Image 1 (cartoon, rainbow, N blue to C red):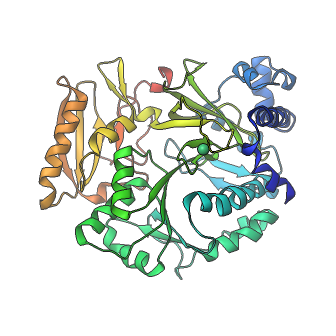
Image 2 (image 1 turned 180 degrees about the vertical axis):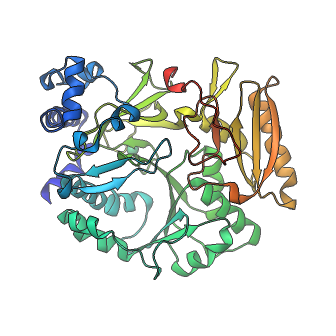
Length: 458
Ligand SMILES: [Zn+2]
């Protein structure tokens, strides 16, 4: 208990002390991975590295980057650093490729609970100006899987969960509710009004749909104090739109299922990296300077169950060039640009990140759901889902903005679709030139033309 309470305050240490703690954790994580997992011992031996070679943050550059394909190419038992029976099993959502089985140690779970206690349950509530008894509502996609409407805890997880998580979890659950979004905001609005949440946690695209309905119908009973978005990139136009409609601040969190929380926004809305890991942003293997995009590579410091070292999470990010004055020493991301493989390739040497596309297209309010699909360097498809009569002019503006963004040489084809063609893990921008699979975002009619991965070029 003391450990997690202490751990979760690490990012408040002065920068030099923060670095000392991070480097100590790094040495321990590398040593643990080498001593306890076949995967990482082989990985280091092949690269001619001993655990002692990784002492300082700069030494990480010597460690070969591990992709998801590398990692899952070996059986789970080779990647385990602890007895799986004592760990908490967790599957990644499989937005790129098959779902990946991951494990978290009890100690790491306690850390996350402590992080909740210090960083979320109290401090983050303070950041978001949410009181200790204010209710939280989470909106997720899909059908409720429980019969009685109450969320059930997976019994295996309950058994394995750490002490702190066991104490904090139920308190948290007492004031938190998860509801399921399927196709229209009308299905969930009565539940939101009844529960009266002060914090709503959801993907920005669900919140946009909710905001459109609230604005169209004039519903005034939904009055959260804050919104917390995750799961998709957040563009500034959407943030402003949500804040205007709901009259509250919108905060962003960046998580990756196989890693956990990577970054969260502080009260100044700077996107700080969690102290439980080290984030690198790399371009061609070298650190990207602030302001320049690069791929996000993560070293998890505190999860002994399934260590992850220099793991390429598949996203592109940009460091901020200014430091935050909130008192946290952890680094700040300027933006999350989206998945590497969702970047559009324009004229073979120009890339457009999903964030750039969203920023350009979300300047129009009350849009139907849309998706840009790049089919070749010369053509893109704009899929419009469930367009209503009154959205005609908004769609015309959307098309116009996309044409300006892509330039004259790229043909834009527009198609009308129904919401049945949407998938749970909706990605508004995808590229056939780069995507490795069509698991979540495409329908069967779409061919999966595999090509070069943008990761080799970013
Ligand atoms: Zn800050």
